[in-house]
Image (cartoon, rainbow, N blue to C red):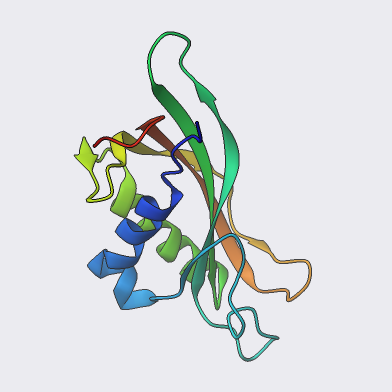
Length: 140
């Protein structure tokens, strides 16, 4: 059995959120796409979601998955605005089941740190941790 990965659903929810979409539609899973991470003077806003890990509940088919949302922007204040929009898109959202059968029981902004610069591009980003409670198997 392979554990269900809720990252794709959370990525879609963030991308489809109108406030986030007003800032950027560049929402990526794993790493930036070509053309996202540019040098100084050419910065673009974008978000990269990566898995930090997860844990299964001992006696029921539920897992807690932790994701890192790195919210890149042109300035530190803009990174904070984008991180706030991403937080609003996923925080305290209730039960939902995707068409593919991924059951999510809740998603929460679990905090993060203030804005910092990317060591390679020097672009500002503000990160937040997303906790997702999801089923371990697809519902059919």
